[in-house]
Image (cartoon, rainbow, N blue to C red; front, side, top):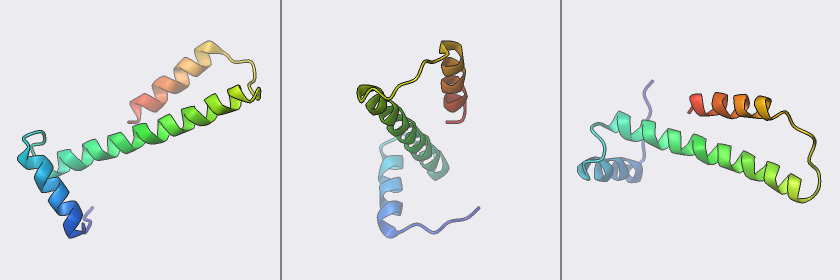
Length: 76
C-alpha cells in the first residue's frame, strides 16, 4: 500500500526518526497506529465505565471479559 502524506506529516515522521526513536518511516507509522488503536480501546473502556457509573451495568463473566481484553490487546 502506498499513501501520500501531507508535508506536515512527513516533517513529523522525519523529526521522529531524527530523534533516534524509530529506524524507519514504517516503524514510526506502525507505532502511531498502535497508539491510535490503544486510544480507541481506552475510549471504549471509558464508555463502559460511564455506563457503570450511571447504573447501567450488567452482571459479567470475569473470564469472558479477560478473554475479550486479551483478544483486543493481541490485535494492537
